[in-house]
Image (cartoon, rainbow, N blue to C red):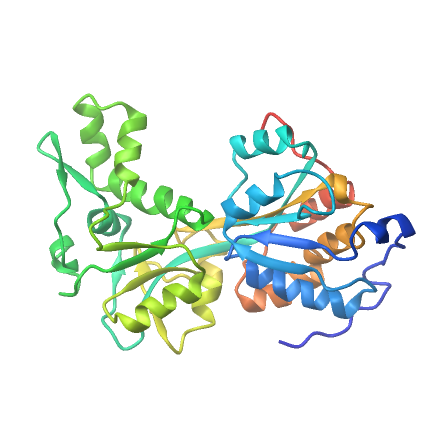
Length: 345
């Protein structure tokens, strides 16, 4: 992907003090595999357009990135954590215990979670209930939890293809997993009446939710701890496989994958931006405010990332699949003013 050099008038470059340069000369970022390609695009463009070194961007998953982020303050800790979900209260508490008390939350845009399979295989039209029935560990039937023994998609719904259930889903360290559990498994459990049936039978709400989101461990559903390239490799070696991906990854692999509809809606940037597609989520990164002014280029990188030229609807991130945030100007102001999260959030 090519970039036009940005002029200094469009994005100002702040001077870096000698003290800051002595700490560490590049920004360090880690976290979500969903945010990784966006952050990499921005890092490379930042290195080309600014008098700062190209930031180092690593993956590892949202939870792993936030864990590293919360290890403390100083040049031996990362400056930014990428996340495909909001930071959790317990992570904020862990940060505070390690001295990371001022955190700036930056929403970069939106992404859809899609369900894709081999391009030459069967086509699928899913609902959340289909996925709950296919990969839940147990189903609540006739007043009792019963082990899920379904092995074929047409056992889930006769309208689906006669194909073995083989799901490749994000592992628990990925922010995508949390969205998958809540917006697909829990939604499907509710859609099929299983959640209400558990409540009617006296199961408390928290336990019912946990049961709805518990995934079978008999091999029909496989956690993928790596990034989406690993999921793609699994489908390449098992043509029955259905993988869970971010929209952007799918759109950059349409020569290998076909995408399923969800509740009758095809996932596109348009259907996600309007809210019509039901499985979408905001994407974030988190900045360690204590590192601003110490790590050269940190604030400049953050401002560049969410600039109209980069994260706006006509920018390179939108070309790659990011759905621009209608409230991007509010995020720009928050970063400019270094507004930190409320510790009670």
